[in-house]
Image 1 (cartoon, helix red, strand yellow):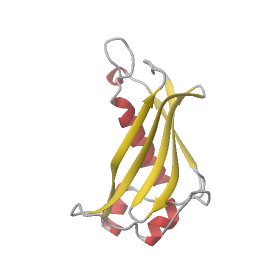
Image 2 (tube, rainbow, N blue to C red):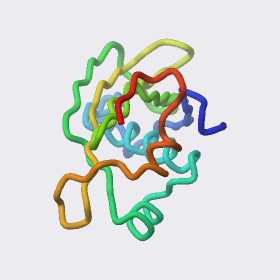
Image 3 (spheres, rainbow, N blue to C red):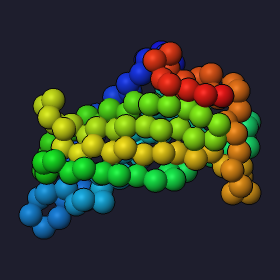
Length: 142
């Protein structure tokens, strides 16, 4: 995956620990799957969490998140977490994530990430990071 590709995909297998007593994925675990997808999305662009912290003195946190659950995932399902940037502006990244099985959306997340300094105060996204996370198709303001 190049840094300019809009969508990143991460396969995730559903294990016992992800399910409730009925073998259905517990609703909060979709957030965990999405977090892994976002972390890999950053890593594919050369921006691991440790590098962001140590080199740039920043971290990204979820500011808000809306999830639409469409169908349940079940034990042993192979899911695909698709992560896409919509916009990058100032100190925020708007993203959409889809958790899919066999091409069908199971859960769709629309979220905003906020860029913070290590002391927890808001920070503009540093220009080198901005350049790596902004796909050409995104609507952006810097």
